[in-house]
Picture (tube, rainbow, N blue to C red):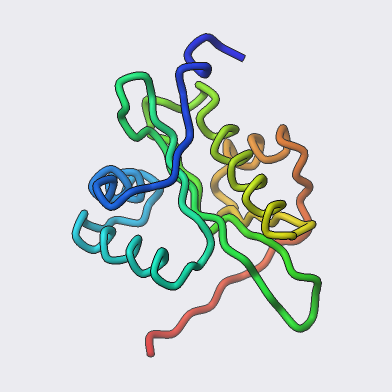
Length: 149
């Protein structure tokens, strides 16, 4: 592990992180603004839908976030899933992603889940290599359909 990765710490996301969460979401390919992100974070917290963690560097700058959620399906065992994980463009490779992933896994284990799932766009090859290094195995590929309602 590199020296810079030891300077990364993980904490729960706060309302005043909304602008940083929005910027990181944009880097992931999901643009939004700070006000919308603040509302989303509040809704997640109010509904107690999983947990949101942030990675911060030695200057207390948010350099990454992850959102882990419970998934309860009739057709399979309950599992926890990463709804999103992103590390800032300039902070990738410093251990923040692994620390965020481990925080999500710890949360999932504390909630009684025995399985963690991650979905990753087929074009995100660097992310795929990251998850394989973290002992995840590819289970299937699928197509996502959606419809505005």
